[in-house]
Image (tube, rainbow, N blue to C red):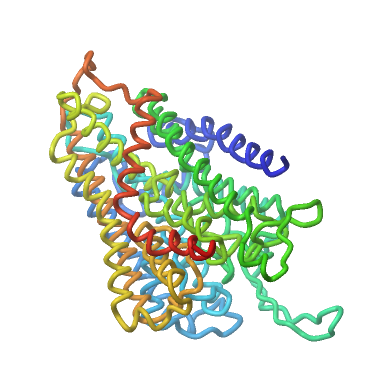
Length: 571
């Protein structure tokens, strides 16, 4: 009962905050006055003057895409160089040397693309300066990039007979100044109050009270990075074990705040979408799709982990739940969080493109591990990343509208815009590119000696680890089945390529859809127009998402977690 109440409380708070935050963001993007204008407005105008940007000029989708790509590639190069030169730069109290070229490439792409895959241990590899100036800054701007692309798509849906979809520099700047920065400041202060470290001091040498032995304790400016890593659905941890580390996530309250912050912006952006298109029912419908899918899969994850491991029975391990024993499969989980909060975090972090962890997904039961894997393989659209999740979901909506139109023999329409061949081609690219990246990357790794030599677990589980890695990179998530030795030149380069393709080869066709829709005439609704806010349409979109996900990945899942589940049962 306690676990059930925790889940109700979590989703209840999430949904209660959706409307006010979503309405606020709609005002920000529609350039309406908000309470932060006196301060943030001055900073915004100063930044435009400093950068030579005319905030009143707008861009075509191609110009918008070029601006987005140039900005992100320059950020990628800056993070790469920062890692390579960190041994000669300040704020490096531990004297850490330069990061290897392949690891620096992987990390630079990872943080620029909002993936935050980490093949390194943060406290033993990155200096304070690299963590703050490289990783934390990219956490802000990569999240703001996804939000900007979403806003451009929304303008494409709402405007007609125009080629302009907004200004990338304005959209990104407002995302950071009015949304990400204020929320991160509030969350960072809350996390510091719970014991998350925030210091420039060097690592602390302490003496254990019982044994008298000394131990070097890693510290650093973690709270500021943790706040934006969660709010921006980034996920990259300051410490190696991420949010399972007591200095990143020390208490049940910090655990709740971090989980809430992972989904709050993706959820609220659904309401923002409804406000900006002039029909909030559209946003609530998309949020309903996301919530139904995540709750169903969360139930599978909790059931799988709480049922325990049949192999533990032969070892005499007690898995019965009592007042003093959490029961179930506690391997790889923090006692202070337990099974429910571990399964909830694993589901939430892979529903969003977050990738942070408070338990080790590699230690989940096969079906428990299948849930986060499949959530990523659906395209990171069940909430998804800030901005990127919703524009990925809208690609599925376009597919659903087009197929339903074909079934009844009418021209497909969505919110007054005809959905034609061009939009379908671009939406198909958005859906199929991640599938190709994941499956081709997995196949190449398993066929090459360099890919196989660091698979340390045999049989189906080793296959699952590789499949999970490319599912994570190919959908910009960043979590891992950590039994795979991924910090090698082969995996650093291959996963880096996967992350780069999965981010930018999806954002560009989304902007192309925005440009195409903005240029169309608005078509008045008629008796043949498909309502896109009804329970029937919600069920239809869920069906399309499920069918695409099943057809794309069921054979691979059958070779990994599904067959491993049967092996655990002795079948």
